Length: 99
Image (cartoon, rainbow, N blue to C red; front, top):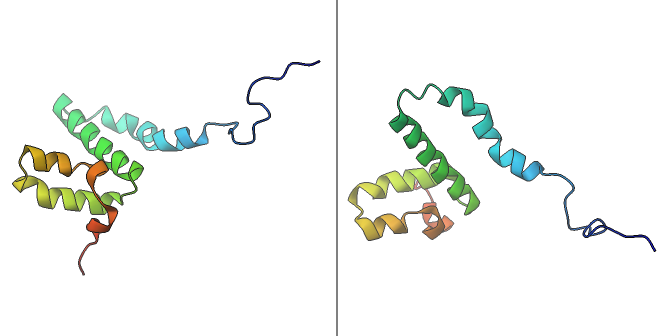
């Protein structure tokens, strides 16, 4: 009897890592640009912004609408309200932009 490797015959497994590669591609492309952030605080600010955008995407939010909502509500938010502005706590329907 021949041995089979676990999962080789499981059709649910993907034989590649395209999803992971596509998720990190924007960061790999921008890597050279980030070398010239000018200051470590600029690099930290960029990392924070990219983290918010990717977390918004992961939570089914459209990034532009989420950032617009965030920048409108963040100035008046106290600590508890700031937590509620994180992407995982936002309902996508609340991000409708009025005409």
